[in-house]
Image (cartoon, rainbow, N blue to C red; front, side, top):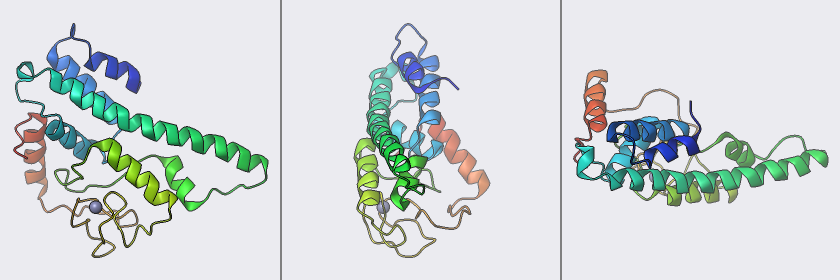
Length: 195
Ligand SMILES: [Zn+2]
């Protein structure tokens, strides 16, 4: 996989075909996907208003990559702080990172089993909220890390934003059959989504 910065440059390169720029955006979202690839992609299509005919609004590709890039920058800044602090802690003999640090060291991975159900705020806001929730010790079994809503059960999606609690069973909790999910994904990929 190409690096995020290289793919982001291709998204912004108007010498490339719109289709290739869209594929470069896809590489960016494969590289950094706070909600998993499909839900992150759906979010970008909706929030940046990427049209079915890309030529109708090529700026939408800029809006999408800008949104992804700024959220990734916040994440990387936090990860760099974490790595630096861990170096100091290890030097001082503290081998096991705290729970928040374990999570933060692994990346932003919010699970959205229905890829059309995810927070609608700008990604940077959600990434900041999740980092803050972890750092302040919010219990991920009772409160949604992405939007702070009270959760209704360990294996239930957040009623407000669709994110699954971190410790939920790793089975698919989507409302759709596999066929319907494939159809919905095809519509999203063709940017015919109505939301
Ligand atoms: Zn939520």
